[in-house]
Image 1 (cartoon, rainbow, N blue to C red):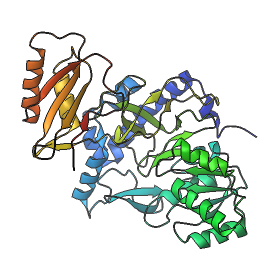
Image 2: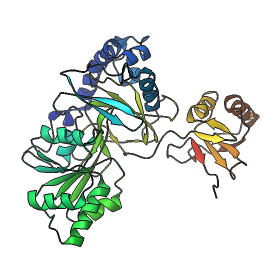
Image 3: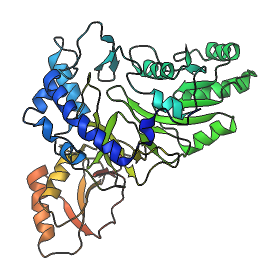
Image 4: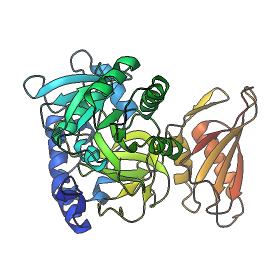
Length: 415
């Protein structure tokens, strides 16, 4: 039995880049022609010229907050804000809602969200019974997992959320091989089973998502003889990345192109630096190009020890939207990036807000190789010009700012 979902996982870097070179122009053309919103965003773009990651990085980023506002503005005429490239009817099986609300189409296609790859990497195989504890109400999580499980030949018990006692009874009766759902609910099930003396030893594996599963919790599951893996997926993009037996980051899915950019910009950061995760999906039905997830992550060097050759990311590392109100004014990462663009001779910047509420103090820490005369004054003037606020400019050594993706750090006392 193969260790891989398909041969795409182990293709060479050259093969993958060639496939991207061929797929990107077609996806841009598809977005321009069939997605009204992406057509407007990409109206000046020559699709044929977008044939590499470098060319893709020159296109505008559309962030999730923008998608929400465009959807709101177009309702009820178009619930998808012009982003969907498929109409209601035989192709569109369902419409789902995510917080916002943001509405997403579900297309009648095998493993539409491509979650089968993550389920396979988590050890599930054809003939397994999956206890699916994601909600089947309004949101797509349960259907994402179910369609992925069906893609590899699994049978699914649609457990949904809540009703812990009934779920434990079903596990005892049906003896499922594994679990899909949030890690917190799996822990509740296992603890309640122990308290009630219910045999759930059939559960040997799990694929979890939707919230953090730190190593301490993963180890706790291992102590209960359940091997748990994580995946990172969204309703907009489907599977983005998934954990493997190596436990070294998450491998990027073959159906998306991932970039890490400096928060508030569309500028890619060097490998290893934390930034906002921007994803381009190759899904023709919902062709999101350079979609800013608002999540922080970083690219890991090298490839997965399991033999999967695609790039790896560290996983979810927090939120990129660090917009902060300072002295009654909103300051966002894009403004810090604008100041940084005016001074190419310096490195990273980090705006630190201290003091008590109503007595805010703003310090911009700037990585600079040398203290050029007048540099702090010029940066201070730029800060006032961009943010309309005054702040202290502090020059620090290159590489001394934390690599955590934070552009604005709110260190105020709220007591």
